[in-house]
Image (cartoon, rainbow, N blue to C red; front, top):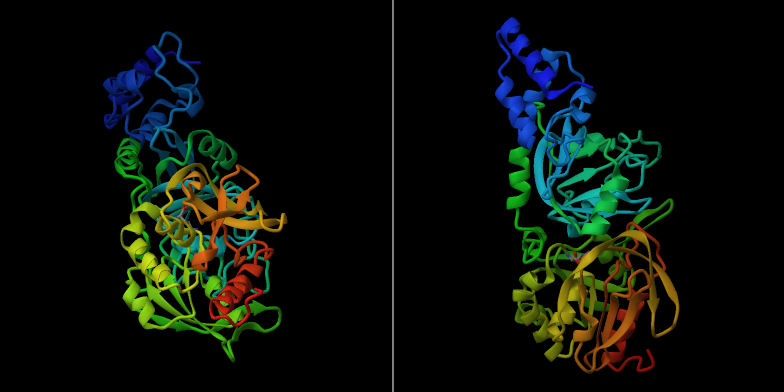
Length: 461
Ligand SMILES: NC(=O)CC[C@H](N)C(=O)O
């Protein structure tokens, strides 16, 4: 192990010999005190001194060790081409994948073993970088059918293994190429377990993922960028991902050997408010017999009711429900007053709860994965569900007349509510199963039954 004095001596010698070493003894002294030598200088130091990373990362004798100096976070290890800098100063180095670029976002983790394409393209992930805990991301490639939105909404991805080669008959594009085409940067080689544990213990941090084209890193600047980002709380992202204009939806769910179908004889007219709707939700509605008119997130109650819907669907979506509530709650309250049945999913659930007078809050640990157990309190049955949310409805704040219908068996948080007198219900999870299990498809039929009941067609439903 070399002492700092050795390094200083070596640097001095090298500087004199090479005549071109830009960082000298002052910089090393600075490192000794604060670890703040810009990362781009470290390869020069290593090359000039013949020191290895290990020489520098083992505690130098006689040095006043700066905090965390065993990790040397400002120094890219040999071959690193990308890094993830969290707002607490932790740095993860790895190999860049997908497109070059730098993205700031909330860092969340997803534990699903399938459906990375659906996850990356789910509009609810706007403003987030996803740390995938499943190792074989890329194993089924990508295709045009598994897009849950027009483009990926996630700002980046973090994986451990390098992107797995596709081996699936539906694959039309390698994940690497897909990411490049959609301008999404990613990083592989990250200890995703350690990162997940960090998120579990300390909450979802803000962070910057950088895969620079020139291979140069200014970690201090990236850290400053992560710290300056305001975070998802208070952020209305629905207005960024919503449809700009209304449209009709009549495609039904995918089936083996047939692909997607077309709706033939719809029985109910539904207005779906698009806060960031996943396509498979719209397909499930179409499958259940609903002729779907999709309206932008900012649609007013008047615009919604003008369509004369049998029911109104409130979609999933990104960001903080409290921020989107500013315009969505008055619209939903107008629909409730008109006694038109409502079904909400995820952000739609949170917005319905707020419209009914309840509060929402940011979860300590978000739920993102495809094996989340939820109990339906009305039947006692447990469903294995797909989930993706960082906020939740505060069940204690629900007013009289609003029942808790579903709870998470992971942490007891609210997963569903119903306001029977107002013909409204909603769930926090994703019953459309894309990706994930299809245990909860029954909810789309419950919505149709509720519309019938409201019209007096089938009072038993
Ligand atoms: N999937 C969703 O609709 C997410 C809802 C909300 N953005 C949350 O994180 O809780």
